[in-house]
Length: 181
Image 1: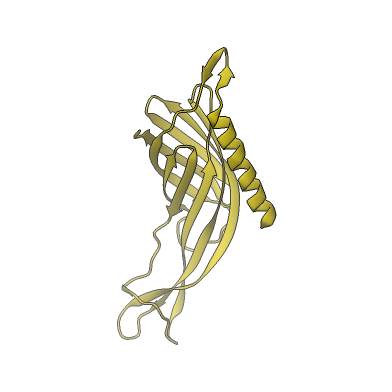
Image 2: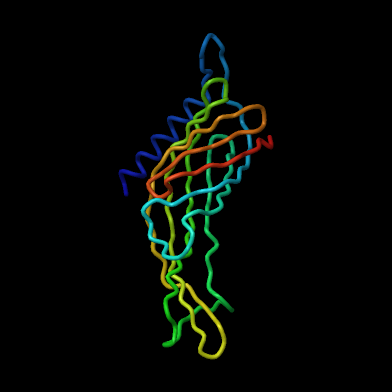
């Protein structure tokens, strides 16, 4: 864990140093401009057993200056009312609810039209149990967490951009974004 935190801090400091100094590329000198952007897209899991649930989910993300973060989820749930406890009549549905999250630092290249973003994050999975003894209810079992590292590549034209990438939990991620500021 200490090595991972050290790597993250090194990437952040490298990115801060990089984005504050003028960069000369093809005889054009520029400083990466501050911006705020949002994105929405799809994500697909890799090697995570989700039972009868979907491995594909919705992902939302944002860049604030050079800092990137996103979250994805599949929205799986049980039938009926959600409860915070289980009874002796509960049974497993073989459905899994999952939520992913990632943070990273974007490096702006080629006149800010190409962004490279190394990320770290994780996934939280929860098995869904059902109980229909008196009325239909469901609840989440205990959560499991797995960490991930990955890379995103963003291609930008004007205020619209497309991001694609992967990490050790998500085999594929694709989103469409808009630069607000």
